[in-house]
Length: 100
Image 1 (cartoon, helix red, strand yellow):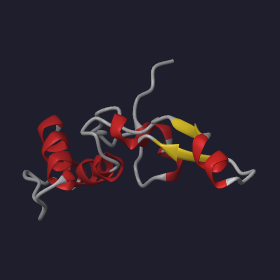
Image 2 (tube, rainbow, N blue to C red):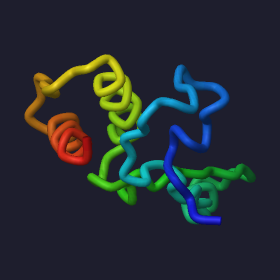
Image 3 (cartoon, rainbow, N blue to C red):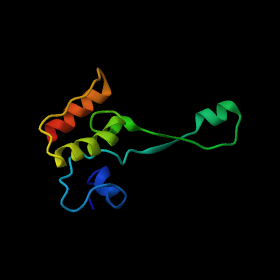
């Protein structure tokens, strides 16, 4: 089965229904990576994991929220998406708005 994005994956926990048009670029499902060198360097017997959010469509964790923001904006009839940002938020908003 092909991964279809964050909203579809958590649909039962989000404010969407079967009639909601989902705006997705396949965000989420990023790998959880175990770091082995840091605990060894610190001399600690612990497990440390990180999420590699750079594998999201625009290279940012901002895509996780933007999929829902744009989905709900479209659902409410919005014709434009705006945001105050010079970084990852604006890149994500532009990508999801283009998909919408």
